Image 1 (tube, helix red, strand yellow):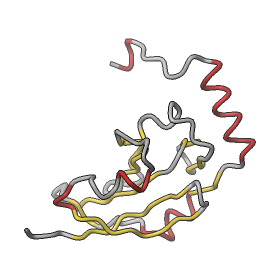
Image 2: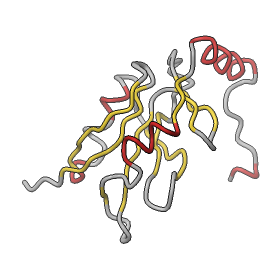
Image 3: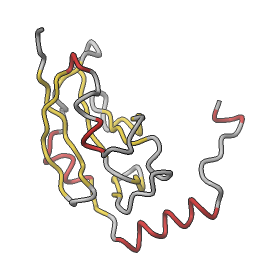
Length: 135
């Protein structure tokens, strides 16, 4: 079976580091899920960082009660870890245009107190609320 190895930028909030990882684009997210931990079942698109690079995170990060997170400049607080995947002009997988150094400039890791405050807000407000304007 052919492999298409691509580079991604992993934001490891638990260990407070940003690093390059490789994955086989033909396997989908099979190699990416383990980076987030055994509780991660679904990745979601959080935001585009530019026209080619997309930040993904654990869709159930708050419910999984991770004790780590990070702030992404211009996007606010992200609970858990994140990964930046790239695409080319045709929408096919590619290495992120922004690279590790670009992501490092945008990321500030949250302190335990900041994470606790975010979890407290989430639990106090009943979690994520979907309203008709979200649909």
